[in-house]
Length: 119
Image (cartoon, rainbow, N blue to C red; front, side):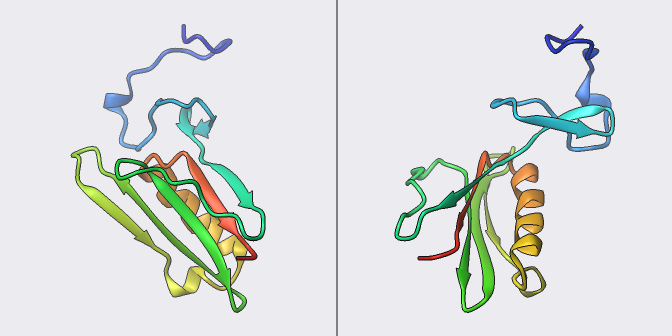
């Protein structure tokens, strides 16, 4: 049994999804498996996202003229760096920007999505 109450242990290598368990354990159901969920933190006006260094994984959504632009950086499992730049169709609302950012954050193990609504 898994350490979580009543959750059976499983072999993720046999799954065709990108579900996996990695710290930190902020999780939700994915099919019948668990996934990490990125935290969402709203920055106060005038505050900046913390520096995560060259090896860090990050994603920020910034408001500008009624649009919401997402940028980020992370690492593929192969060790190759990958960048995130939001698409124009996702910039139209905070909900759309956050939905797209969450998908990317989950795919590339980004632990936190920072949101700056007022620079």
